[in-house]
Image (cartoon, rainbow, N blue to C red):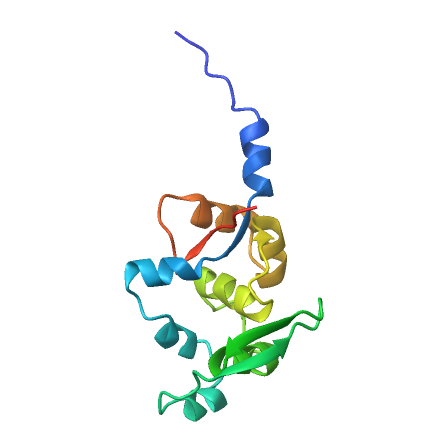
Length: 147
C-alpha cells in the first residue's frame, strides 16, 4: 500500500497567487459578444435610463484619480467610473462573483489585480476567486494580464 503525501505549496502555487488579472477587451471582439450590452447591465438604475436609447458611445477624456493618467473612454464607461461605481450597492454580497470582479475592473480603469487583491475588493474568499479565474474557462473576458 502506497502512502500519499499531502501536496506541498511550491513554486506553482506561489506563481498562481502572483497572477494579475484584467478584462481582456480583445476577447469580447474575438468571441463576437456585445460588450456594450454587458456594460449597460453594470450601470446604476439612473444611468440605465440615460443610456436606454443606445447612445453613449461618444469618446470622452477620463482622468484616473489614482494615477492622473488621461484615458479616452466612451460615455458608458465614464458613467461607470464617475458615478455608478461610487454607489453603495455597486458591489454587494449578493453580486455574483464574476460580475463583482468585472465591476472592480470597471471601477479601477482595468488595472490588473491578483486574486488576493480582488478578494479584498469584493469581500469574498481568495480561493473562490482563484478557482474561478484559473480554470479552463474565460468568464466575461477576465484573463491573466500580460506583463
